[in-house]
Amino acid sequence: MKGEPYLFLPGPTPVPERVARAMNRPMINHRGEEFKAILEDVVAGIKQIYRTSANLLIYPASGTGGLEAAVVNFISPGDKVLAVSIGIFGDRFASIAEAFGAEVEKIDFPWGTGADSQRIRERLEQDKDHRIKAVLITQNETSTGAYNDVKTIREAMGDHPALLMVDAVSGLAAIDLRMDEWRLDVVISGSQKAFMIPPGLSFMAFSDKAFQVYQKNTNTKYYWDLAEGLKYLRQGQTPFTPPISLYYGLREALQIMAEEGLENVIARHTAYRDMVRASLRAMGLRLLTEDRYASSAVTSVIAPPEIGANPIRKYMLDQFNIILAGGQQKLDNVIFRIGHLGYIRELDLLAVLAALEITLDHFDFSLDMGAGLKIAQKAILNMHKQ
Ligand SMILES: *Cc1c(COP(=O)(O)O)cnc(C)c1O
Image 1: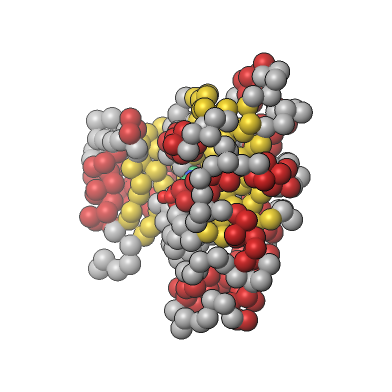
Image 2: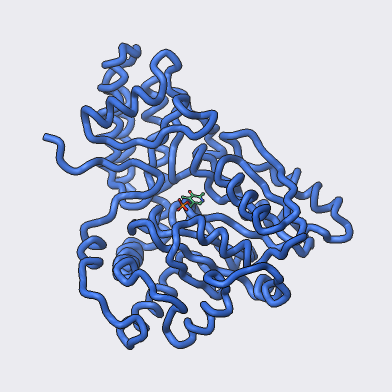
């Protein structure tokens, strides 16, 4: 029996039944009282996850739309921008800035690692006349499963006035992030990762300092212009028709997260990461990232080269209806990725790990069947003792 797919992508992630049901309601007037209450509710809820009291706008867009909104509102053509990249999403943020006229200087770190804050510190110290207007960084690099220590990177910027703009699309609510405490200027996130709702919403919070930069901004914008968003938000509306169903889902998802408690949500993701990594290692598999960079949202597994990552994914899909992510660009067929963010339960992870052992055995990879599963079972037992 095939049944529903087991979705282990680092986005889109599974949608809880409660959220799916909440979304299945009639449309309402997006300029009426009911929508106003929903909008106020979800903005407040998202701010709790951001740990911020800054302004926050919701855009009807995938995460990339949120990144573009950040670029066109806070970066002007000709601005020098330091783009820190540890993978494909870091590259994307840099490309968007470039597309809108920024003079982009990129610092690349090897795929599978996090950025070295010392190098960012040194580069900014050299920038005596403060030509660099913004530093772009990815909180969680979904393409590799490495994350950046955003707090330390912010500290490394010292007194440099550049804005720190963070792509937290796949990291927020899976990995600790404290916008106000860490003094982050612009933080972008999205709906289809740890927020447990379908793709289509992105979130952008910005500090007062960022707002001052916005007021002098000369970039071309219309749909993304934050002044419009703020003006309408004050009346409990959005400038353009919002995807109302997604707002229903968002409100329910925020409620689910509030019931669990943000600390517990983050701790759960961390525990899943450790469990998955220990289990994979017990199977004799290698991981792309070292422990110190390892993401709580997604784990990249180096496939045994004699098998290749894509045949493993294909077998898992055909035999078990398990959907794993592949490697992108130079990592295609080299790694496969197991997403463990959002609405993933302990036993879902047992399912994917058990199926992986069966798959490896099918491909005659030498392993002690059950060794990985046993580690995972013990990890779950430990979680329940706490
Ligand atoms: C998913 C993701 C995005 C946004 O991608 P979309 O396909 O536009 O939603 C941006 N950054 C990171 C790190 C992501 O994981």
